[in-house]
Image (cartoon, protein in one colour):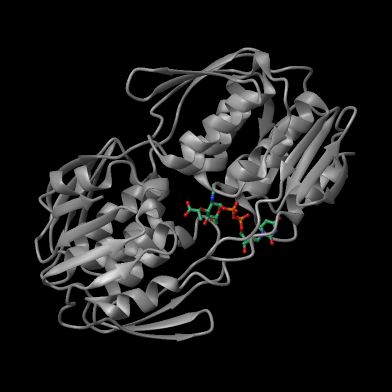
Length: 417
Ligand code: EPZ
């Protein structure tokens, strides 16, 4: 397994370009299942999760043609195998996003249950409940979701909790249903809006994306379109935190703070000087950060995907911070690894109390999930001495060429095979 070796204590400086958003690209690629005509994408990030999904779509009969450095054409015309097998779904739980489109386009689907992951059980009951409300017959046998529907019917659906991929799955299914579907308690994440924009460019009739009530008027078919994936706001926030933790000064290109208000506000509270441009963000860190407390919640509140990164910067800040995780039941696994670097963290249920220390000392640590890995990278960059991070396949799922981008910012980091 690959490792990352980081020589910490260097203030990051310089410019780096942000890639397309993983969590927008995943549902948007699944939207290709809804049309018999080609979809052309740009600003696609090169990530393991994306490659896994393209393998899955290819197995279903979708034509996959890479174009240039970040382009892709998907042709759903050849779709002939509505099956998402366990061996692929188990490595990439967002594969559940093929369920709604397959049901809407083919009238049937067999999708492996994603199963849990490190950060929680992550059930998909809301996806199933919503599709059943639209008339799908769904059974779960031998670890697979078996779904059938002659033609989905529009319905009024209110999910029990805000679910990002649940909202996305139901919105995609509703595009080809008979009549109107109303999704209440819908997720408001920017990635949901990016997906809606792509679907509308394919001829879908959607209003309210970005609010908690989304209305979809079903149509007979969707046509081809072109779509540029939005910038990755979590990758953006991660590099901002890396610069903040190392006392650096960076400029992030091809991104926007438009979807990061809660994160930018917290970084300003921590003492960072942030200057926003139309498609760039500038951050200058103070000599020492101030501790910032936070509570994760659905968008537009502070994103759970930035919680681990903020725990890392609080480890080296001045003061005491309380971090409350309200979305996932087990998303503090980075804490015990950060403690190996000398961090002072007390976990009490879904609360973490972080007392800033003057400095962290490099050590060998282990990545446990995607954002926990990012947290360890940030701490390793801030620590004195060398940090070795093991199991960085977690990182490769969600961060494109991370060691190249960090090296461009002056970090001393290398991948050890
Ligand atoms: C999406 O996951 C993101 N992944 C996650 O990012 C992100 O952390 C999460 O939304 C929350 O913002 C993608 O978009 C591919 P949820 P998702 O359904 O959709 C419970 C990353 O690091 N729930 O919004 O799976 C669930 O257990 C990843 O990039 C049910 O109980 O999250 C959780 O507690 C990690 N039943 C809460 O709702 C359901 O049917 C929110 O989950 C669905 C969800």
